[in-house]
Image (cartoon, rainbow, N blue to C red; front, side, top):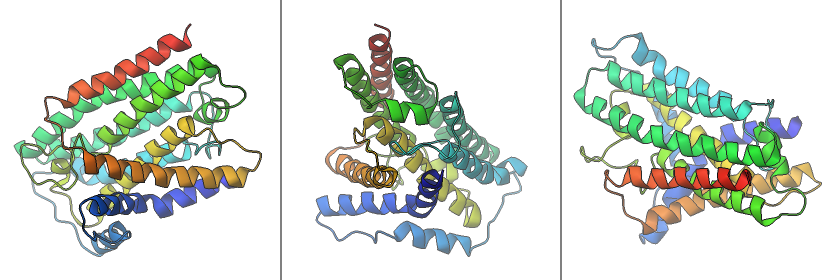
Length: 303
């Protein structure tokens, strides 16, 4: 229990650091110095000191969106293990609740964007829903494939049993297929290249960023922090299934998981440095490919 609590505390403290690591890697590839590793922390503290301005068009839905989104991702965090470190709350079927919690976060963000009455933000919300409908299938089916293999429906049990004992080829293939699918979903769901560019200002290519243009101050701080936690949660799920380093030392497992999260941030930075943004018509094709990988994992698990 204490190691699970440590994971939560580390996630709350270091989730914004992931964006700093990604940006520094991109700066290195671009021959630049880049922003500070703590830049997102500075931005969050600056936003917390500012007030929020609300349009007369918006209702309570717009104001409640950031709060509910942050609460939803916090719920997903306490249900997510890190490697073989179990989740703070674990029970059969919690993997479904994690997927639905992340879906709720997306849902309220889309509602808040639509509540502004802006056609521009409605365009971004439409794209978000379209791509998420494909990404959710790949995420859920991939987790169910591993669950069918180990005959358990808790993320903590999946993480503990996925790499335990001797690894036969069928189970190894399942984890490889699911890990590849989850990496694609992670990039898409967190508005990373090649699906989206969090720094873009091009109207015809914005997806996630366009939905939060009317937010400011504390509301925007909650959205940015929730996004950082979402990246941590999805990274922890990927690490839990792809990290074959279970040991008899719980603290060593936790440290290995934290190190793997940082390595994942480095990998994301490398991917964003060597790949260009996809055309919007190509994004569904890559997400469908991730879904196919997840379904292949299910077929292997049912052999």
